[in-house]
Amino acid sequence: MRRISPSKTPVAPQIFLHHFVDENTEQRVAMRMCIDLLDACSELRVCYFGDHPMITPGMMEEISNAALQGIQVTFLSMDQLKKELEDDDV
Image 1 (cartoon, rainbow, N blue to C red):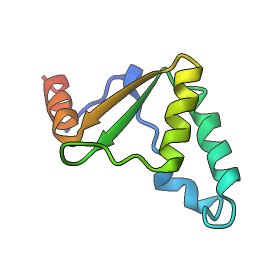
Image 2: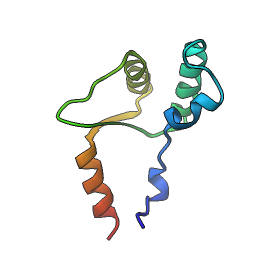
Image 3: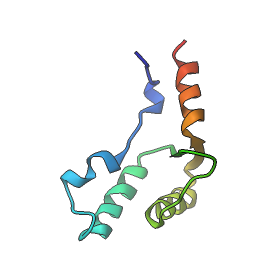
Image 4: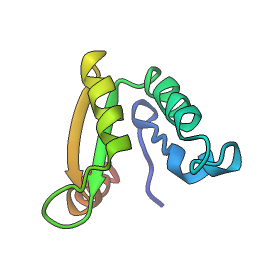
């Protein structure tokens, strides 16, 4: 079992947000909820598959908001994330 440090609790609104708002018709409400969650974070991790992240307009808004607030933004491939989790599981 992999453990995650309490200081690195993951928050992934894209997994549960659709239960509260319809992102197709309430995109601004959904983004506001994401930004509100981001306000409570010390780091934004942009995880991606392959060699380069594919940044959507919504992701760019979150990244920009984080940068403006002084929140660390880290780009991490899924391979890098997997290695980090394995290293933490010692």
